Length: 184
Image (cartoon, rainbow, N blue to C red):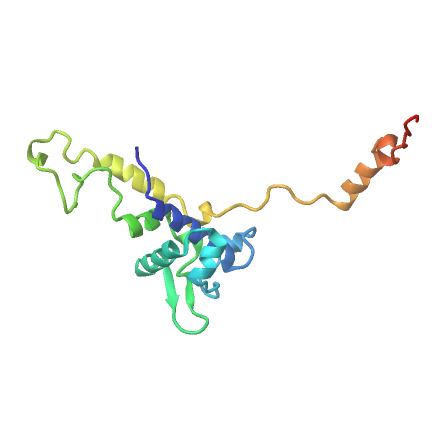
């Protein structure tokens, strides 16, 4: 089974909350593509409260993501972290790579630092590159903006719809119930 670790999953949750809060309205296109300029600075404590991710995990993630250039950190009063660039420009592949290292299913890929002892006689040596590249491309094709929570799908009913509903209610729905007394 191919599975991202829990911290990487948490990172996507935290980053999508940061992106949603960057412009104050995640329902707009601007929230997903909004420039990092003017993006809200968020503390680890605020992010833990907003996302539900434990504070120690959030603190660790924010530091790693800042080191990878996905976030920028700001010191001092009013300091914290913010997205370094718009959510639409941050790929899921960049997030995964920042936390887990290069995307690879096996150690025997081109340019890997490690390899198994069977590599010289292995018939599969190098053949995994095609699979690794497909996964990399798929994750590169999904941005943080794509991962952001969507706004509620239904718009509130319009005034005319409310009036139509009231007009078409059955008569029995508009009257109060008649109380029936029990016989003594």
